[in-house]
Image (cartoon, one colour):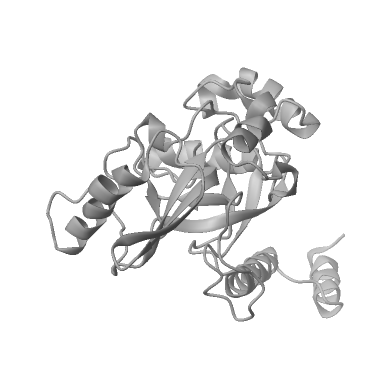
Length: 280
């Protein structure tokens, strides 16, 4: 075909509605941005993107077929993408653990009661029922899965995604009520240690143990646990989680999609030293 005919053919394709590739890419990116903004307004999570990729097996259930595939895959890619080994630990007894410490609880009715695995993506929602244009969601409750920032005393930078197994409601600097379990702590520990920690932070103590903390005397502490862990985070060295640390709650599980984000995250981590994942 002669150059003139090729030019005419190209003009016909353009007039027929064909678009340059760069325009199509911009349109796709624009659509994604609009979708993310709408999700942020509807779901209210305190995160730039209401999706988190899971990088540990702390919420893996032994009877979860979907998770077992990621479990096997993790053995292959573990040295490249994961910072810790992936194994079943206490997942077969997680429901009984809760029932023993909170008689009358029904873990089968908890959100994400089937757990989730390394490599999953979790769609998240508002941590406290606020921040949405429509009141779809209520306040966090016992059994919810929360994503929270670490305190200054714990190692690592990635947020943690675990289940709430205990709640301490503090009103005007004193304990109002307790739901669920405190595990290895007592109310006296909160009265004499943990509430004073928060009040110390509020007073401007430069040695404050919390990076984020409540600004008033009325707030919540959460006791958290991975379903596949033998004990709570707090009995392993992490401070009781204040509601100011909670970024979001887990809502819907999207299996396997997180592996793509983990690959991208590893590349960014190596090149720029940044991470966009949540741990367990």
